[in-house]
Image 1 (spheres, rainbow, N blue to C red):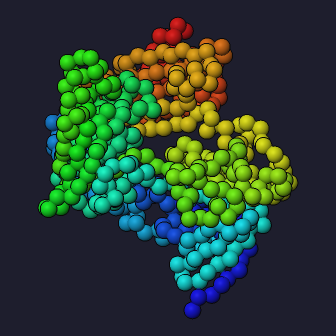
Image 2 (image 1 turned 120 degrees about the vertical axis):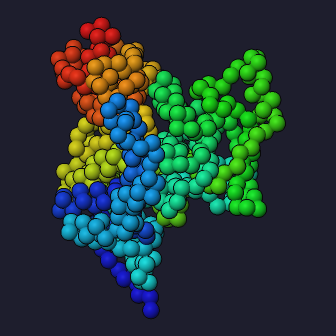
Image 3 (image 1 turned 90 degrees about the horizontal axis):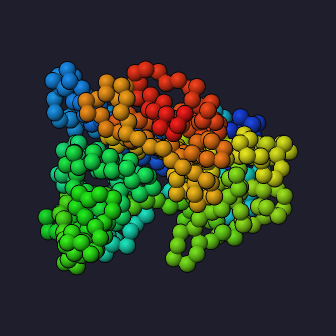
Length: 513
């Protein structure tokens, strides 16, 4: 028999992924009560279907290849991965898709958990259809936080609705390695999983409508493309997908618009012989056959079905809803949220629609939780100062991002184009990573590094590194960007010898210091 249970908390958090957990943790630390509402696994996408399993799939191949690039180690290792062992290790890092450990942490932290589907019904009011069969009518004394994450985009490909295909969830939790895998999408998830499965033994074709990793500098993305090709991935860039259909044997056939096979990041000119051939191929169409199709065409905030229309927030016709927030995560334009002077609705992480990265979402969640607690105590009114404990200022200046392919790609802050668009008088300095540390790290090490510099203040606006294991260079760059360290002071940060970090010295020398 279903019961209607009425409960009241200081803060209600819809979504118990990493972001929701961090919001709840911070408000409890601030002396408030909190409840998490979650219909799936506590810990969310990152723990079970994204960050952790994908990196667990990638790391064995990177470790094996790293050993194969060092004489002495190369002779001692086999040339192939044990796919079953890789999948077993992946299962360990997902806790076999059991959330007992996460639930224990929630309970020990003093946060209440209600398993079920929650939606907003009015300002500070949330209803939950509990998985236990009960219905819960919840009231928030101070805040409701939307931390529902994101959901995959579905590109407009004919036939896609009619077949079963992988999203990143299915790709990271697969029990077997398909013989042939097609990947639609040249972004981070697409390239990471294409390489992971190629190294596990699949024949992989990656199809991207535009360039590979187009948000990153071209020179860096080209190194990743070369790494994919070296692993046997058939990379087809600037190539549309017309349709997909299932064959009698269960395999899938994708009809493409032609495009560039194994191409650089720019399509050939139409007036060249190569361009004419590409145009002819696009007119004729080409096809590929695969056993599985992974669609990795980006993500959008998962805001459908959580009742935001009840408080005046609705999506434009035919488009997903996107929220506008202030620097604390406070949602603009929600009923009774701003004009009353008693704000209540917040969004954090992917749901807020900013940088969809787990570490950045957790950073924002901590600021949001602290801001809610401070407002509840009357210690914060209005917008906080930039770089204060309650402001998510790094979203605008220093978002670190790593592509965990082999070679890796890591960047933080603004690209040159972004800096110029924002009105900075910016320049770049870039060079190959060729230092003693890189030579020792691997035979024939190939890497590339770039700094984006504010010429008026002589501080870093951004940095990009590409090459084996460059992710460990990124936090130094993040600190320099966030701290606005002057270049003439950065010159005195002496890199240890012989490490790959010596590239910092070479970049500053190239700049003229």
